[in-house]
Length: 440
Image (cartoon, rainbow, N blue to C red):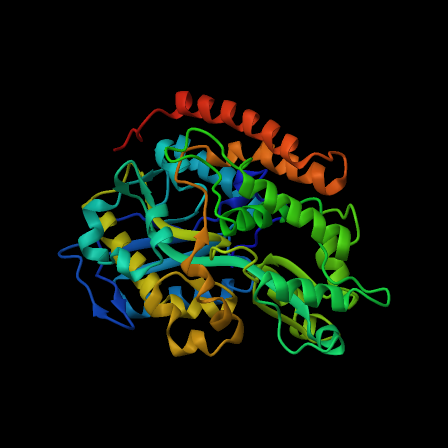
């Protein structure tokens, strides 16, 4: 899965996980899909595929299985996979772009699609969509639209990693409750009931993932981070004030104050905390054999009136490789289709397939966590597909952190200040990137 760091929003590189396929020679046979059969790449042959990725977590072995299956089904092609450390991957991608040695297929995260498109690192894939074959109906609407930039398609969603609620089932049952909360009223009841005897009902930090929690609540309360044309930040709306105040109130009632990043996870693992919210990638760290209590995971409760769940997403793209040709793009398209068609396999490593058919597969739905999260990813909270958008979130992250740490007291004033700062960044990025990618 995407091993998203606690610093992921402040360092866009940590939001970038790239899976690269270098198709060095013209051609190769079409992908043989275990679900859909053969697809032809015409007269192309002898395609050599080099596969880079940063999937070093529990999902790594499962993407390797897909590569092995692809190689078996395509004897005329050869995929060689290399795992590159996540903290080195952005640099390697930049170096490849500068030296005109970009790979032919890459997984780009949801906040980076537009930025990489405008930087001419990835190319539109409209020319191979007839081979790939998917439509909007195959994915959550918001996931599908995230990969569109300036009227062109740049990617196909592969997996979605949503915000997840982790809870101590032993403490929950001891408090007289049998199920994790699904509403605000349920949450308040459960947190209060478990907040006794030296235990904390809910832990929330001053850093990651508080910005992501805020964004989720903002949308649940009917707000948005930006205006309709994404030229101004709007998270200081009444919905934004309500979201941040909810977080501060939850901290004061149920959590230890001024917790640093990761303190929520670490304290939960001691068995003295009822609930935390974090990314799905924490599942193997805080449930099952990783803890000495009944650590469980479920969808986060819907606090506001609107369904919304913050999530990360990895999409398959075709970089703007200067050495690419018709054969390499065709082979890249068949490989993309193979991975997406067979993405149910990724659920075994903790990645929820974006492709509805794969997500609804019995092998995915038989995994309790995947089943519980399947509906939540139909309403994911992503940033708009605007170049440099991650930069504009830095003031918001600082404002939320200051409120949660107690160094700022006025929620509305803090959000107002962060909006003014973000608007300056948005204006600078408009001037920096222009109105359309150069390769459009």
